[in-house]
Length: 411
Image (tube, one colour):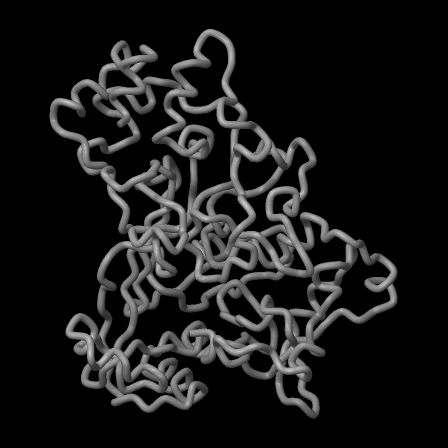
């Protein structure tokens, strides 16, 4: 998708409907760099330093396509105003220029990092307070399922770095601290999320001024395109989904992988329950060609599990949004990639559900005990691997509210 949509735009501008991957991947290149290879000197020299380090930055210049000797690429704000506003540490607003909405109904994670919605934002913490940086490498954390590298895998991005292993005090402190062994802090302290939970690219529908793609982040200030074609989506606003996770380390084969698929279970050593946003996707695939026929994918042919997987097709988002013609959008995208396809497509539900990490939108007061420990609580204890007897016990708050019972039940 990135290769087909690096400079995809609507009328030369980035919009929430267009893809425009290169607008946030901050090297001003006419095409994405080769995956897995270090950047060349020429590529490194195109990095837009000011998009992160300028307190005052005209996003409209960044989000407008320009053509020069290197080719067609996204622009930059190289004004004196931007240069004079440089900060050593990027502001939260600078981070959120790219990391806020990203094609969700309102925010990328459904958990906006704003003073009104997150206790850490209200306290004035910066993004880099937790996401520690070192020579432009950024710590992501060990429980994430995002499709980006973790530059500093040895740096913890966790609640305990600041709050310690036993953060609760007072009358209920002991029982709450007993939960931490099997529950991530986010599980109680992020009560609500929102965003897309179902996305079908095979059924384009018209958006409008009140449609799911019209609400954009306040940092972009880019008007949506009324009447554009977008995938059929289903929006969820409410409690997160919950799943077991273990750290993404080399000694944890059951960790969540880069496609955000769940592999850990209740019995997995060190697993804890985390909140996530579940996403089911219906993507476009070739009717006859296989994935192993694409460049650098021949290794899939030798694996019985992947040998028959159809070729994933990458539609050009700008064509898709403008015309609603899936065939034309795929043809434009595959031409940009330089990958041949049969000319015949089908919509296929991807095997497995993706689970998007949820870490912001933290509230000072967590969920009440009865929010989980009741017959109609937010957690599906059976799906999480508990026996019928354990489920009955966990659904009784008077049982789960005792320190000894609570610690035992969550095991």
